[in-house]
Image (cartoon, rainbow, N blue to C red; front, side):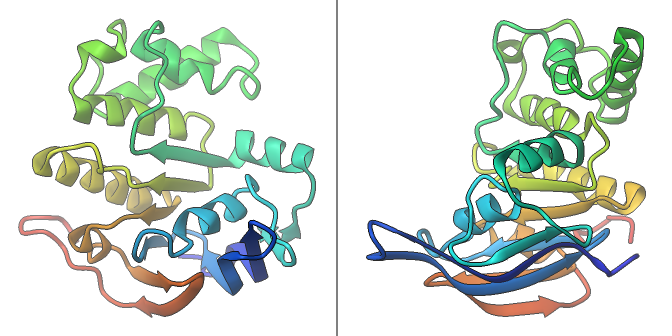
Length: 236
């Protein structure tokens, strides 16, 4: 695994309500290529703001953000970077109900992959990898919650990103589906070398990550790199 920084935050601050609410307080962080990282902490501790700054949805004031060694500044630069190199998985899926499974995934590639043939080949590849080969023509509301989250993961991977950010990806799922989604993210990270950052309240999910970052009151209070806890029967 290449541990040089894929993404890096340097002395990032973020406040709201004219400084009365401190979301991030002088946070510096490096995340390397191919890491599997969890970010935990109580509600309101700054986890979501950290993610937003990491992917350019928020601007640190002050602070600097780097991706693959380059400082990224400006909305246009961040928009191009997100489209090409960052995938997102959310708690509530964010699938378009009027589009089929295949169309939801293909939509993510419209600005990146020129030909329809190439896009559809990538969709077919992802559906096969994620066990959704028979679901291509179905619509999101015809799927289970776990299947919809798999579609969301396929969409996140469509442009072959280097970084996947998963914000409470199992928050809407039952325990069995949650375990399957974490298995999937972990497997993709190990097989493809993708960097995966998971924000979670679930200590069992955090324990399965190689690196565990804990936040409180806008600061990182612990950052541990240890052997992840594998579920019984999992492949190391």
